[in-house]
Length: 261
Image (cartoon, rainbow, N blue to C red; front, side, top):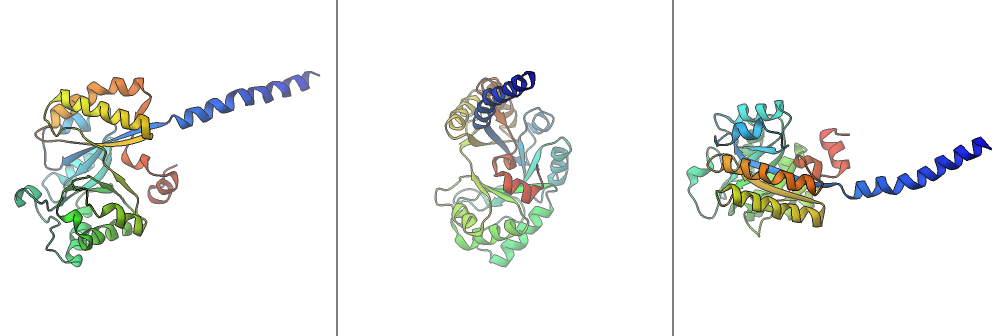
């Protein structure tokens, strides 16, 4: 009789606890914050790389500090990606730094530059575009980039600098994991604005389950860091976790690409 009672208890507890676990899994809300311009920008670098929020550090290739910032980020447990300079419709070419991806390059030269960019940023798991409103609309250029990303088993984040970007279509065609940016944090340089954008991101995550924001080090770096920190209590309240970008990919991709889990 006692044995029967124990079995009944286990059976009942199983029924009580199972749905709770399932509800928790369904409520796993994740926000990824990408911070661009490491390797170039100075403002906010220490705040982010010595901070507690698990940002993903997007590092400009071919700069004096590319390797230093990538290694620093990795050492402190932050995910690293390549912040690939691509030609915009407006703006100075000098803003792109050395060896940018411009619309006049052959596919062969694009591939060569992308491979070199990846080599110059140690520990990179993914790639996003720096500027690029012109180049991302060029199918041949984007295809060459995505082919290299596929060969290196990396992911792409489309920074969303043009609504006509070819990244989503070509990444899907070639089976490369891609995520699109939802919110820019520091298009206006004030901590109040950054916090407001962070709350907009939280609303997206509440609705969609995941969301991606992009901020910057450099001129806006310190206010960007402050605004993110000021919003973090709200994220805690809403049960939204800050995660590196790779955690937004499917578990299958994480296992295959990065040997996670």
